[in-house]
Image (cartoon, rainbow, N blue to C red; front, top):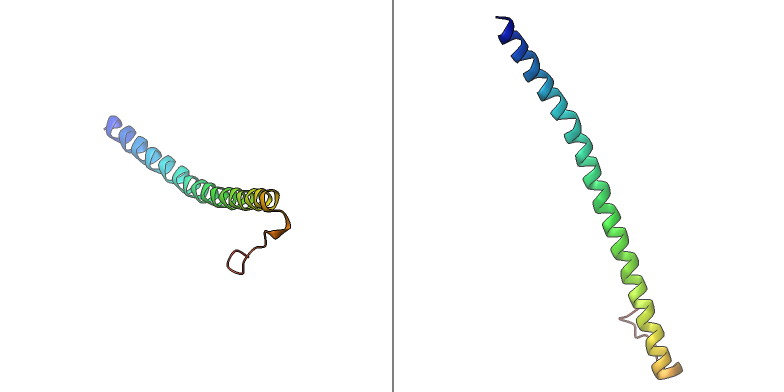
Length: 70
C-alpha cells in the first residue's frame, strides 16, 4: 500500500514538473523567433547598403535608385 502511494506521489510530481518548463520553453521559442526576424532584417538592410555603395563606386553619381527599390 505504501509503495502504491509513493508511486502516485512520484507520478504527480513528475507531471507537475513537466508542465512548468513547457510554458517557459514556449516563451523562449517565441523570443528566439523574434530575435531571428530582427537579425535577418538587419542583415538585409546591411546587404542593401553594401550593394548601393558598390554601385555608387562603380557607376559614380549616375547610380540612382528607381522607385521600386526605395
